[in-house]
Length: 455
Image (tube, rainbow, N blue to C red):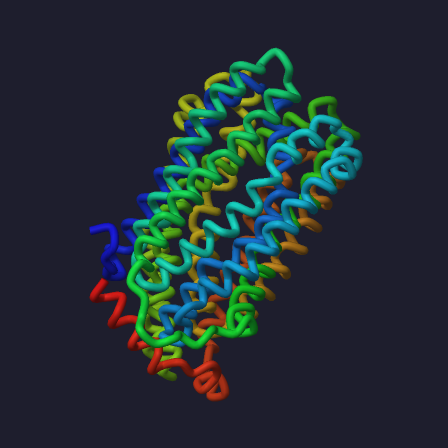
């Protein structure tokens, strides 16, 4: 059952369940974590993540969709082997960079505890890059089980070990925060081990002929634009965390706690429904890519419109529910917060509820553009919206009395802009005749798929 290719709907459901369970565990994790760390500890926790996400994006984020696109198109047999060499090396560099940047980041953000937190988290950059390659390999073959299973295993290990360590070191706040980030590293190591066992078991039967190696340029053609696309968000979040906290410190004494409530609490709740539609984005790639590769752009665009319509139909009710039940969600997940903090969090969640729709649509539309053979267009979209978000956050916090609420409003506006730009790109997408003959491994790809079906 776990080795079979799934249909579009079944694959989307599997990966959506995995993503939702993973996000739900992450949200539940915030309950004891907030109890142990408090608002200040959560603020430190979130201030580390932007740098981590930037390095993780460079070494891993473009891999699953890029490798999946190559393999599902029939022109990328063995692409994952080249990706292991390329992105494994990049993952090592990312780990080293995070270690070296730990002290400068702590200095810039004026929070000494960040140095130890970065050191505890940095090894996971390498392991996530390897894990992402395996996920992309299976997604390209229409098998979403490995992605779903490893996502859940990541969260389970992180939650259990993180709670144990945070409780054990709760009397020392910097050490408690650092230990929860060390739990992230351990979770990535175990999940990567599970994924590799799955991969080598699947690859046990090899073809009699030698598969022609996929060029690094063919892999990077998709992974690099996807990486540049994905890196826009953590870069904007890193700059936003620095600017927002510095501006807020000129207005209040609890700037770090306010940012922790926004980034660590409100965003966590809002991202729960978004995780459900992630499956649609991942499952759309092997559906759209073969049509686009054959030159049937109209057929590929119809598949893209279907994915977007389903995304919209799922995310709108989720956004309405999020707005209506925000007080209940806050009370259940973040019961340890004070009265004023809960009131602020409810307000932030309700303001950002619309992101459940816009961010879900951005997620799916970006995957559709990649499947259509135009990943660079989603890159442009993300960077335009990222610059817009940072600028608007700075303006709203500095020149209004909105405080941290200004960051929530700017997030809403930036995701709406990104969704509209992506829609326009998809509508205007046309056949790229020059792309059809590039890296043409159809014969070997078809033979490899027949072998995979037998295995």
